[in-house]
Image 1: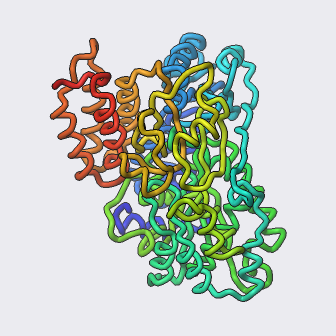
Image 2: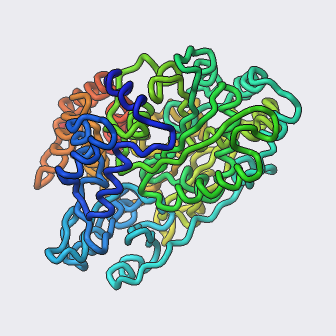
Image 3: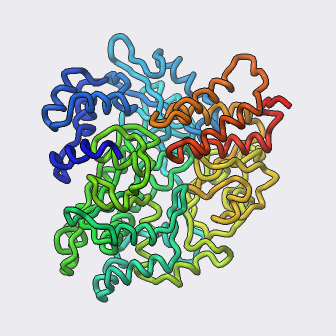
Length: 559
């Protein structure tokens, strides 16, 4: 978290629904075309009571505040799925076609072009954003160049489970059951612990344990919060986007159940600005829930109070880390803070806070409605409880979102569920779980997809994305792509991440592709691993180590 004095200052000036420094800066940029001016900084400081230096710091951190905006603002996705689809040829073609560099605006102010990672249309890459219209799939580039963009198709969704958990419509049955049968908060918390639900992000921490820490934590004001990390951000993954936009009721119900178990009366969802449809979908669902008595001061006449606020971010991958997420919600720079204290003890506005991601909380309604045993039985061939949404990138014949049991092999997922690769291509490697996940070569596709087996081969379940690289992919360019992303998205708080990722990127970017000093690279990865403050720097070595192990010659490593 930022300094305690600053957090206390924000808390004293901030009502739950009051605009933050970041809110006001984003509104100014959208109105004036950005970037932020000194006059805007002074105005925002005066309106919020936050020092001008702090406002300057926020204005210089988020991507959405740093790029100029023309009358027509076009963003091009440079995420890993789009890289796998074109090798970034789509970026060059768009830049040349629009006649403006990435990060620039035409002299007459008519058109600006910016880079974005990621738009969540990995199933139909490459993807573009033209204003608030997402364009993707066949012919997308031509339509953007012709100023004839149309909304891109959403991914296909299906389930391999007899009774879907995450691909069913949310109906609030779990909350109705808990409140209607007088299940106590402690009993609900016990059930979540017994179910073995783990976080569906990278850490896979036990959800019930996190909730119990927050429930038992002292709050100086008596208030506690539920915070949802809707800033998924992992290139190649679009699971949380799907849940927020096409099944928001399931998430809101999970939040309310978490609030009931923990003793929180308010929740926040931080949504990525790269997902322009997510905030409106969640707000509409919340309005419907309030009208039905499912959110508010007296939920279903039970005396339990819980409501939600939906907040949009401003372009930062590292805000997906929980301490950076809380800083962003408070309108500050989305930088990482040392732990302890953990958010469950001292989180949003210095109060006990549960931070879960979208998919994690979307599992809770079925646990509340059906019990721990039924939830554990969803994956009979694995020790990992529950089911998992996985998503496939555009390289597969049948890309989309699929609910699967844990315990299948990655080969079964790729070949039977994903249909293998399109256009006769073959799988060279698969990155699982996002840019911090290991890269599995084709020779290891028989590895089981669960929390125990994947780490044994340097991978993780993570967000559940299966991002295939075909046989034409240059794995040295994959390394360069991932390091460029990692260096750009570092929050800069700790020097191993801030400097190390940039140095590694530069090493892979020397013209002529000279040999890479393997010993120096491995020493740098070790420094990142043990010296970084959060999982961004600490996680980036995983895919690089996979490439070193399985593709050393292609990386150009020296002996």
